[in-house]
Length: 145
Image (cartoon, rainbow, N blue to C red; front, side):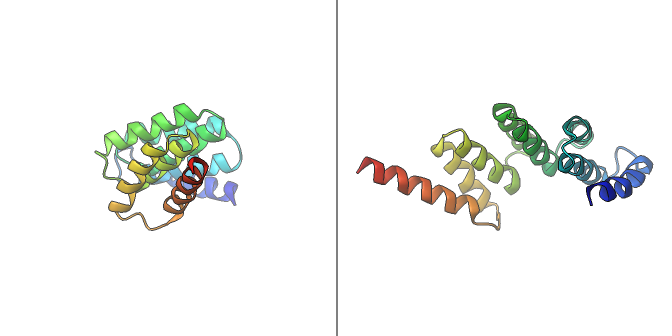
């Protein structure tokens, strides 16, 4: 399915001007499809281009985060999310959600809570981060008691 997504998206991507509103979505789709094939260099190539061409396209930043995290480059992955969050002026629920997850992975629960609160304030629909934080905070509280 990844190869099919690449074949079909590549055709349109090649014909679409770099300033077209759907270009970022196509670049992110190609980046994620190459990630699925574990071709991380090709994935990064499309995602870097997508971010350059459409700097406020939040899904490109989250896709790049996933690629860098897969490669074990967690600090760099978190920095990509921070850059995206800054570029979108903190208004992306998705970027705030993933920043919450990144800070959990870094063991920084106060920062994770900050970004989780912002994600949910912006309407992020899935409760996974909220539930994960609640479990971790309960564990920490029990360890203190």
